[in-house]
Length: 115
Image (cartoon, rainbow, N blue to C red):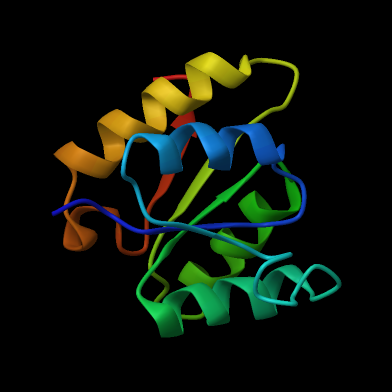
């Protein structure tokens, strides 16, 4: 079983398509009618659904630090700066993460791409 992802609105759709073609469960904010939600609400929604957030929005880094400082739990965030990773590399790295890590290993963590 692999991790399930929740992509915020800043992630190129082609990454979601690449992962879905590999059998990985991806839900996008657009598909969830959440494309205009705040980052905090996205993390809450993903956690509620048991999904790991993937974003190219650096604001998630600050938000996760704030959550940890407040002792609040979240399912985990994977972050990639959009200028430092290609679409293919993001798909490959996320596929590795999906099949190698467990939800407990990602909980309350921020994983940076590229690996």
